[in-house]
Image (cartoon, rainbow, N blue to C red; front, side, top):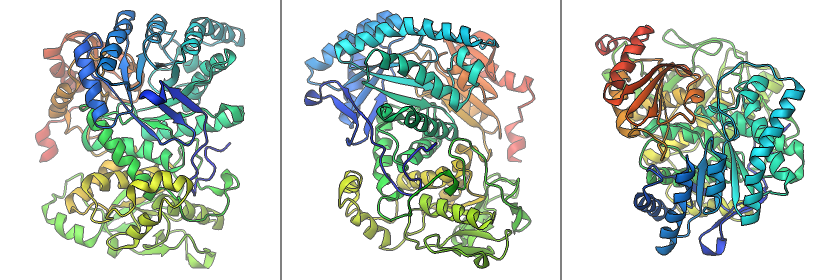
Length: 626
């Protein structure tokens, strides 16, 4: 199987075109040779027509091209008529997507009024009970027949009315049928989507796209890669467009890093036709991050440099469809710090950064430099040149890519790891977020992009732009995409961030990337949904309140979910969950098991803290900071 034409060189995946609305009057075309489409979602109650219109207009004003609105009931779905009518009265014809969970009748109503309907195969006609049950082939076939009976009317209505559809699976909401046969796995997510796609195709309906969302960027990357590989296996006419997103990414720097790792890695491999950055913030901020991220792809992807033809997965040092950290020997990094082997991924800083931050850091601090770049016993290699076994003395030599190499970092380090594998070497690798900086080399490279074809479509926005110094927003995205993508491949034993010019911020950024990639836990981890009309409390306010009480709990993972739609599943790898169960009522979870019900919202954060204490995960903040 293969998930892209060449993991070492950018080739955008060629897909069908999916038409959403009338392109001549505000609609968009997703896929084909069209630019990546940006979208976001309303956070208000769908029954509040005025606020829905206001938020939609605010999103369109900042460049949002598709707006998603939840339709949890038939009543909500019917009100989409009023929202769309008012938008048209104001001259706004942005395509609207109705977000459907659990209610096929709501989907049928919504399809009358909006340009696209999003359905989740895990709960479109199923309610999750997390029941353990063995399905015989006959019983499984009966389940598929039942799904076909529920789903076919919507497919036929969308075909009749010229609507588009998104078949979107979530890691947190797979049906019991899928869970029992495939587990809560990327394969389960893909097969769940394919079941519904086959029903659509059987009815001659092809105006749909796929999504495979997870709050874990590494899982999300695996899912999309597997989806594209499976679509290619199904046949050349299964080339449907892909919607990219990391669900429940959270807020602030953490949310941006998670999204950059998942979305950016796939965009650099040529996958993705529309994106959403899911932040627990006001929706227009998502579009700003979409813009910044898309503008970086021409620099981060290998659009320009010729690479030998990719022949098979054997040419890679990693399995694209199953995360496994690259095996290396354990070595001394310096000052009794080891890397490689079973050691955690280490953080390296430059001498200049060390001199600025070291005097301010206590010996017990979790965020601290672990080695100085200039002091390392480091072999710097040029992966564009032939590597010989005699060039590398032994497997215990730390290696990295030489500065100035004419390749983007993702490509350079993938090639380095592949060539080491070919030589039978397993040296630990130091990853860098940038290879060319502080001079005109990258500016020249940026200016050279966009001379033809796909380079023009991606590089136009960057020509002539100054390369350095990078703004903090761009430095964060670049470091997250470059280092995070490689970590998701299982490559890397230590990392060095230099694109961020602030010493303290570059150190913190390195640790945050490791946490987002699931390589290291130095602080509390939060899975927080971005809010929508289903949300039963103010997510931004409650998230801030929970963080104020719990952000000192190193290694604890807390899920904050506005409603039950994705809650239990997305919380499967969280220690504790805070979920809206009813208006002003909260349910608390341990893992995916609900343990406390209908707690008044005013008491819920205190009760969450009590629950953490009951499970011996609590420490006092004073002890942490002592």
